[in-house]
Every structure is written in C-alpha cells, then in structure tokens.
Image (cartoon, rainbow, N blue to C red; front, side):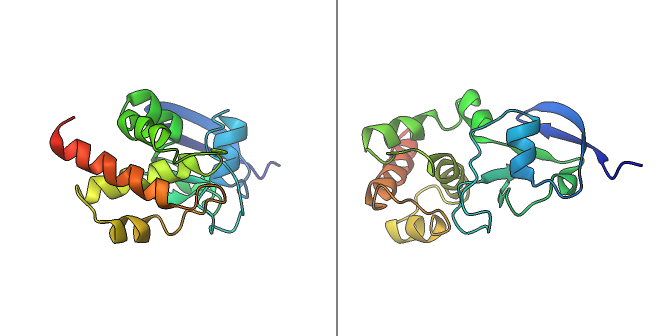
Length: 160
C-alpha cells in the first residue's frame, strides 16, 4: 500500500497531476517533480524567502507548504512570471541597479516585490523595506534592491 496521494495543480498556467508523498514540500515538488529550479531552497525554516512562490495569487514560503496542500490550487513560480513578461521591467531595473549579485535570493525577492507593487503602486522606501524584510540577501546590502523596486514603481507610474 502506497502512502502517496494524487494531486492536481496549475503551475504557471499548466495543469499537472502527480502522485506525491504527503511529506514532500512544495519547494521540492516544484524543483524535483516539475523541474522548475528557479524556486530556491535556503534555510528550510521559512526565514530566508528564497523559496517564495505565489499560491492563488499570494506569496507563500514553499519550504513550509506541503505539496498535498496545493491540490486544486494555482501556483506561480519565477519561471511563470518571467515567461509572461509581467516582471521584465523589474528584472531589467534589478540588473541595471546591480540589485542582484549571486542571484540565489533574487527569485524570491522579485516575487515578493511584484506582490508589493500589485498592492501599493507607489510604496515609499520604508514600505519596500518592510515588505521585503522576510527576504534575506547576503550580497547586496539591500539598498540596491530597494532602489530597484522604487524605480520600478516610479517607471510604472510614469507609464514607461
């Protein structure tokens, strides 16, 4: 008798049905079962934000979410947001502002920043800092990241 469970999920607009163990994290499911490696696993305690994905439009820590909990739900990963072009302006500004260095934290930060800009069109620096406080980066010192999110918001408001 198998302990595995069938789940059906929509990931980046595509339907998947898989047979998964009840203990498999959403991060491991996305990376190993679906081969989408943009979702990174860092601390595995929900602290670093490297594993952020969108579940039904809201960011979640995929290392703390079990794959079986997502049965019947929609998931968006960095691959989905990148391929759709939804965050291409932000990715370009992150590159221009040197807001990414090793890149390990970048997918989670981009997904989190995208949610912030969906909620608040023109956040101030303190709002950006607070919203991104659950995403750790060891390389940039955060100022370039805050600059990039602020510039993205400004350019979107200006219609660029």
